[in-house]
Amino acid sequence: MLKDSLPYIFTFMALMITMVFAVAYSGQQSNLKDYATIKVEEGDNLWNLADKLEDKHGLSKIDFVQWVQDNNHLNSPVIHPGESVVIPVKKDSFTEVKNLAIDK
Image 1 (cartoon, rainbow, N blue to C red):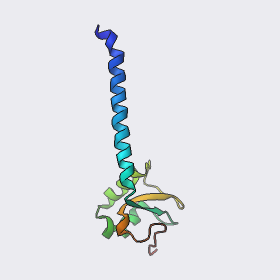
Image 2: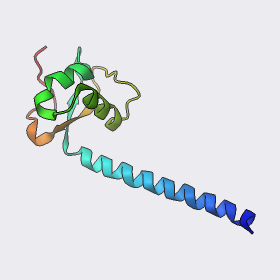
Image 3: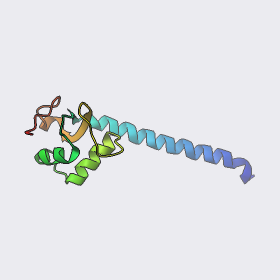
Image 4: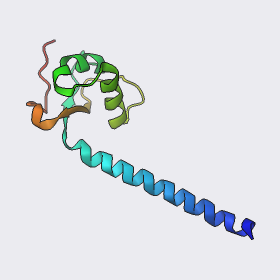
């Protein structure tokens, strides 16, 4: 009897796991709209962005880099000119969203 119900149990568990991930992902995406998006310029990297925006995000450099990687689905901390990335700075505290005017 237990053998007959195993496929149903596995199917139910897989469905539940899928639903949990879907809900978690959709919640994360809706929260990201509150954060600024910047266009990566030549010479930018996550570490110098963390430094230059330190007064706006309040995170350690490591936490800043990890947040950007996680929320932009990056496999590494490497970013390239022309890419757009969401950063952990609220839009309302970040005056220029389209192009980040940073002293280079």
